[in-house]
Length: 233
Image (cartoon, rainbow, N blue to C red):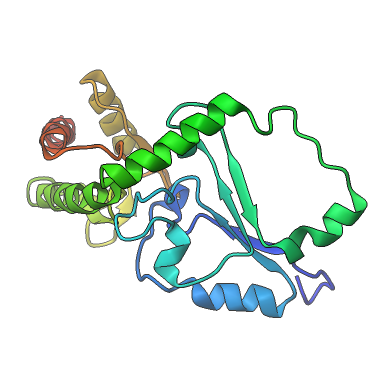
């Protein structure tokens, strides 16, 4: 962009790259990218719609895993646990010029019912130690899914952080060649047995396992049993 005379405005990322295949490691790897965008005169926007609200188990927000401070944070779906609401946090200096020159209007801003739902979500996360559950049950889920690799050659790399787990479906473990068709069959077989997951990644060959934050070990056992049978089929 710089070579073409274009000044970058921002770097915006989901800090665990959920839709790209869930890439959690190593914590801290985003620091260099954030430093680069700021040197270029841009800002860093942390999209916390998926990695936020304690899902990674180690931090409330995904950007915290990288030790970075965003200029803007965007929040969405999990914020209301089904009740429509989204949020945006920013530093004053980032929006100061915008505030001087533009009127901002939002039809639904300050909806009292949605705000009450979001406040209740935060209360439950703290009261019920939901982040601890994401960490502990997430580790159990990761280990159980990883153990399936011994039974199914089509299961490649398995990785995760908290209640975020990804499993690559491959045609060959040595080459790590993607198997998109098999991935689709696995997702559909699980759906037929009452378990909903999806696929992600550039080749759509990565199982995206992102259960509710109140997932239990019993839920994990059921999930893994259905996944095992789907891989077998």
